[in-house]
Each structure stands twice: as C-alpha cells, then as structure tokens.
Image: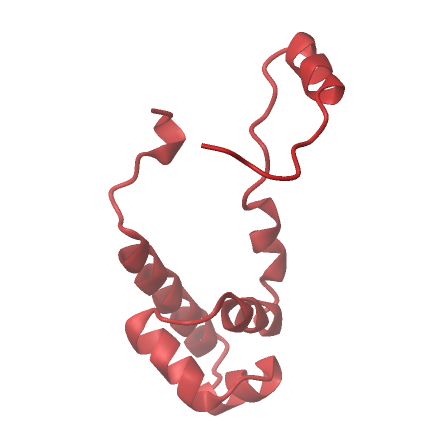
Length: 103
C-alpha cells in the first residue's frame, strides 16, 4: 500500500476539518454565513449544514472555495502520480488511455 493512501482521518473527519477551515476563513474575512452564501450562490441553510456537519456536495464546496478565493487549491486533487524516470514517462505515453476500468 502506498504511503499516500495512509491517513489518520476518515472521510467524514476530513470533511468536517475542511468545513471548519471554510468557517474559519469566512470569519477571518468578517463575513456572515449569509454573505458567503450569497457570494457563492448557495443557500445559507446548505452552508450552515456544511459548516456544522461537514456534509456538502462537491459543487457546494467548490462554490464556497471560489467565493473565498481558494478554488485553485482543488486543482491539485486526483492528478496522476509523478513519474520517477524518463522511461516511466515514455511507457505512459505509449499506453492508450483506458476508457473503462476493470478490477
């Protein structure tokens, strides 16, 4: 198993941690929930649920990040692993990308 897959946080804990950081950044800017919700184009109730429970759609999280000028931080998620050699890069470029995966 790759070391990158090991974490001490569950997905629910990570979601709550992210929500806590959104709330902290919102408060740092001096914004109310209503202000962030309006700027993000989301409902205040959905934002409240996200901040208190960590539960939100990806779209809501992205809209909140955009309103908080932090959207670019999502850009690095789910990138393919870095190649460790030129040979590995060449092998990747020769293999056609699979359209569907198999187990």
